Image (cartoon, rainbow, N blue to C red):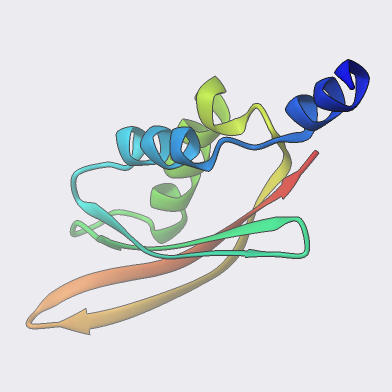
Length: 105
């Protein structure tokens, strides 16, 4: 039935395209460490190096801005928001791990 096919196609999320877009907007000094889809929410965990004097939340804000500006990635999401943040030290480097939450429309 054409109407049912239309409904399915409108609600379908093409995850391969989303993951490709996410890889393109992720800065070189950042790594996505975990993706989890639960309860219509995509949880994105990432880790990034933190330069001397750089504010922790500026890294998260910059990444969230990249996500918001990328239509390929965010067209199926609403309410993209910060979830949590943690600082670590490894081999003399300051690392920032954080989580972002994106809810499906």
